[in-house]
Length: 517
Image (cartoon, rainbow, N blue to C red):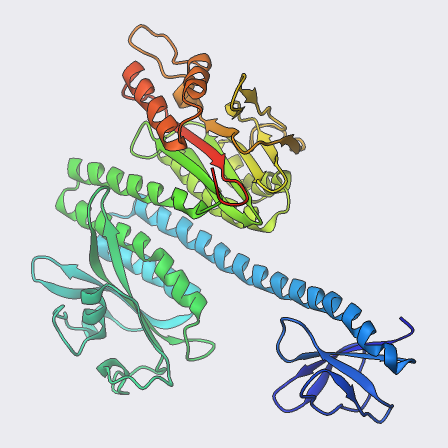
């Protein structure tokens, strides 16, 4: 443009060069866009759109052309800075999600091998406090027999140092959190009269985080089982929003572990086995997203019915913005606890990679890379379909790693199979997973299912079959996805029940750009 461009940032006291080189002088702080004097002559400063405190300098030979030059440069600089901010945000989110995956895996191991409440709680409090960086932490569990909150695990002090607390104790933060079932956070600068922050606790720091530990049995109400407390944070006397989010995310997992240990204590044999299966089933169902996630982008119905209390089928979906929806469904080889563990890892990793990757084939390739070691160790694999539906562009972009039951059902005519574009993930020598794209009309249906539905057999040994499934989908294609799903499962249950393999079905119809059917 025949001139110079430089970026300035206001640091609270003055402008500092942030890009384009430091000229050795600092311009005055402008009140509005326009020309300002400098030791090198007049320059034009304009605020960067959407970024408070950033100014773009344009200096051209013709001062009369500087407004036009600035108007051309500002959106470019704004876009570059916004992209950098988004990259930083994504990196922070990925780091947080990886911590959640590590905790999920650790707690899953605890659920599988621990038989004593104190042992389980001690392991969990150590894992959580390590991730959050708290030097002192404790887990308090409600004892139904005594009606008191009892400290069952601690880090930084011994459980004998703490007397049981009544849930009605008005001076106890833990009792308050247990009663109100909500997170309590105290920061050093807070003006809070709670006794836990009066300086007499013997703690080195003033920041305090207390989170309720809850559990909800399938079909039951949520119960508060106890409280996890953390303080004396290393690296600064403050618990960040990320710390609170992470501890809250695993609180239900802790509740499940506590409930599991309680049941072991009540009945070390049949009672323990039955309740452990219920807990595992509940935890797995909570990993599956609710259709409300898609809000105004699509009508969706999905159901997963494991053959045992837990299984290896999974699905997930997410809004990708601008009318785009990501949909994934897969089937881990075998079923039961081993398949359920792989399913949990896949679900956690899928949430990260679907947000970070650009195309479906990149997402599935990233899944293979991150889960390859676990799949090799367990000698397991899974088929998976991942597609991105674009209502604005009218297309489906997808990648299919060996999943045979993925179909596009148009308003009229025969269903179209969305063929595999790669081998199942973790099976043998993995080749390249390709990406394909097909046109997508507003009334088209995306139908994904697993082989447990198609391979169901009745008392005569007859298969439910793909032909029967597609016939049902076509005969109900004008109905809502929920009605279609109900019809298919009703027919399948009447044909062959109970299931001997996990059964899953997902039906989706996009909404138009203006939000109509």
